[in-house]
Image (tube, rainbow, N blue to C red; front, side, top):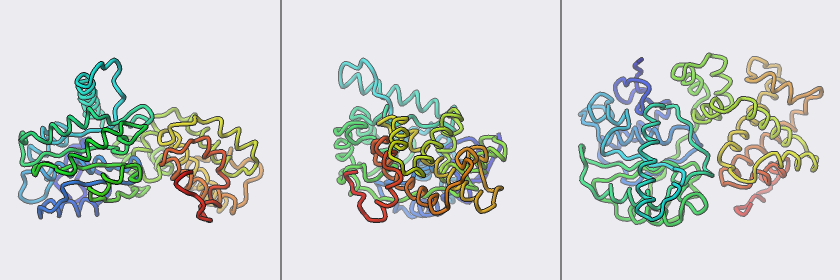
Length: 393
């Protein structure tokens, strides 16, 4: 396997592995300095768009806390770092949403089945670092998992000086996705964490966390990656050709996770769904919008629907590039030609449609009914500009 350098923070690591990160140099610099100076907050929340690398930054930070090097941390060379890179460090515990186990007859059995499912998922992630998360509608972080976290927090570290609990997509503990009791159980751990325990939460939508949890964590935003960074990753790490890498990166919105999800899905379905959304954003006719709305499910906005919005935005940006004569910047010429038809829309209409899809993306992050979003697409930009979009929408 090839060895790549960890962007100035640590020695070379063998790729693929979970300490090999893309971008986010400033966040890592801040965290590395805080670890060296012993002032990293005991409870952190990393928030930002889906798939930009928040959970990997959390694993990287957990490795830095347990690294035995006296210089760069994580050094990516010591035994602790090598174990963290393979998700095998006994003091780094990664939790994330899982499907609710079937036929669990009691709390103890449910907890054991959740832990068995987590172990199986971690083993799959060791084999495939390019995994794509399941859709949120089918998964959650249940109270049994949080009880396991609390038990682990009370134990003595097995190898290093600290235990680190990484909780990915922590918003899955809210009612409707996981369990309200799970969020409350975690709150007790956040209120009085053991001195040798650090908690790192990640979430795509911080507003979905209960206020009492948000008030007990130090929040850090993780921004989208540059499109060039996504393209380079797809080319050098996933092995895609330059054309396909650029095409997926252009649709990703700066998210490697989204790019991988687009690649993993059947190409035709996302393309047609994105075309449908782009047309709906451009079309002010009520019957056309209602017909488009019924092509989508009334739930699961944070799953595939969110990816369709990102791709629809990419199509509209391509349409603008084509209108400006910059055909070389168009990532999917065939889809753009299909969208434009014989009479391309005016530039002002395309810009308004892009603004509407940007608002739609925010609403999808709040898990608003996708059919309602599509039915109101052309009006979302105007509603946003007038300040009439409220929390109840």
